[in-house]
Length: 423
Image 1 (cartoon, one colour):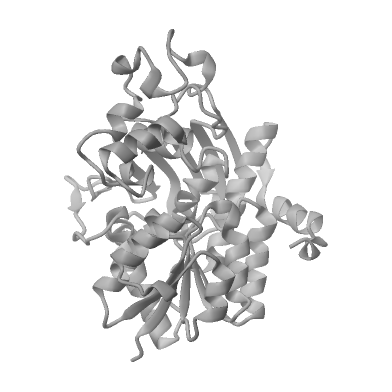
Image 2 (cartoon, rainbow, N blue to C red):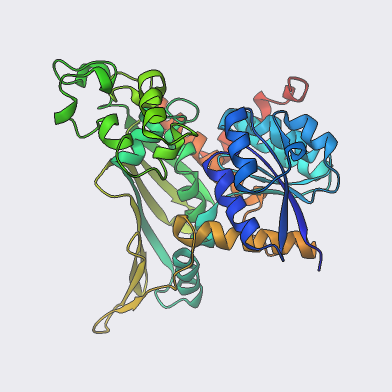
C-alpha cells in the first residue's frame, strides 16, 4: 500500500495538530510541503516538521504548481479563505481536507461540493466529533436500539470562558462567521449523524449581551497591560498569557513564546485587549430548537459562560434514555422498568478533541491509501446539511422567525444561481 503524500495550507494550531499525526505515522503518510502567509510561522513549522526550505511556501498557488504527486492537501486557514483555497486545490484534481466551517457563505458551501464532483476528487470536512470514541460509542448504542425510537434530544456545548474569550472575543473568530457556524457546526453535524434524520424546521434566539463596552468595569483601559483594575479581573490577558504555560492558546498569540515576545504581543496585538473593548460581533449565548423527521424534537444550547468546556447530550427514547458527557467521557444508559443503570467509558485515544483528530486522520489517510471512500465519515455532502442549518438558525435569530430548511436552501440556490461568475 502506498504512502500518502500530504501538503498543508495554514500552519497554525489545526494545521499543526494534523501534521503531528502524519509525522508520527511515517508508514502511512508523509508531510511533503507546507504554506503559510506568515514567514515566521512558516519557518517554525518547517523546522518543527523537518521540511526542506524549498518545500515551504508563502503562496498556495505556487506550492500547488510546484509540488507534484500530492494525494491530499489539508486546508486550515481562516474561514474567509476556505473557499478560495479549497477550490484551488480541487481544481488540480487533489483531494482536499478542509477545516470547518466550510465557508461563512452558504453558496460557497454548496459550490465547493460541485467543484469536487466536477474534478472527481474528495472534499472532506474536519468534523472530528464523528470520530471521537465517545460519540462513536454513542452511535453504536443507538444503532443497537436498546432505548427504542428517539423522541427528543437535549444537546449543549458549554464553551469554557477562557476559550470563548480567546477565540470569539479577542481572537480570530470574533467577527468572521456566526458563532453557531464557527463553533457549533460540529454539534449540528453530530445531531444529524446520531438521528440519521433530516432537520425540517429551525428557530433560534441569542445575542451579544455581555462582552461589550457598556459592561466594562469602571476605570478599565482598552488594554490589560495599561489597566488599573486588571488584577481584579478574571478575564485579564496578563493572567491568561504571561504565566509559565505556553501551550494552546498561549502559543497562538506569538510564534515566539518567550515572555518578552508575549508581552510585546499583548502590547501591540489583538490578544492584549480588554474583553469589553474589542470589536467582537458574535453572540455570547444562543439556543436553537429543531424539528426533525418523524416528529423528533431537538434543543441545543451554546454559550461561553462556563468554568470548564465540555459537551453534554441527553437522548430520550421510547424504551429508555441516555446521557453522554463529552468532557468526563462517559455514557449512562437507563432503561424503563429496569433497576440501575449501565455506564460505558470508551477507551482513551491520544490527541485533541477527545481523540477525534487522531481517529479522523487515521481513517482519512487509510481512504487515501486505498482509494476507497465509501465509509468515510467526513464527506462534504453530509457536512453541508449542518451548515445550512447553521445559516438557517442565524436567519431565525436575526428575523425572529421559524425557518423551513428546504425552503431556505432553495432560496439560497435561487438567489445565487448566477454566482459562479463572481469567483
